[in-house]
Length: 201
View 1 (cartoon, rainbow, N blue to C red):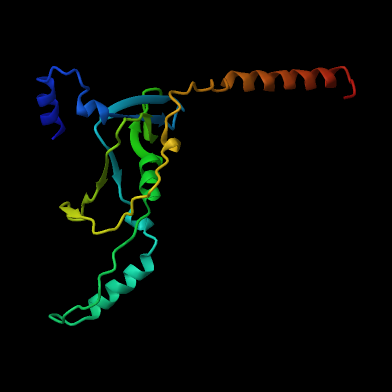
View 2 (view 1 turned 60 degrees about the vertical axis):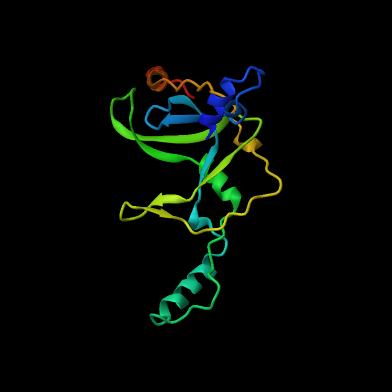
């Protein structure tokens, strides 16, 4: 839809900004190599903020479980007059899933060994108009797409300042392994010299 709007607006000579630019959001992903501690940053531009829905974070999990047990006990063909109980997931839980740390398989370019990396995502630039997409379709255990039948209440006030990226951070240099070796040599020579000349500590 945005692509069609952009094509139509490009033929307009009024000089107004493209709709997609007004909704453009830039995300920044930070990938930390857990073997070397080195970080790598990448950015991506998109027209909306896509959020996964963590069903396990539902605040009414017990009520949903009880409803499903009652539904399973009903005889086949029996009319279900009870209103369905759907999982209620807080909107903040979706934001936390977006910005939370994820462990991924990663081959370290420093050590050359296979290991893991920690990935986090934040927002580098915010748009003038923010569109949010809730990912209701997921892959089931049979690798087929299924729609999540959950409730996510939209908050009246939305504060996304905690998602703002501070930008690439300069990593502190790792302590050199030679420093520890020199320290042990110094201590050994010091103790040897004290024993040789029978000097008390």
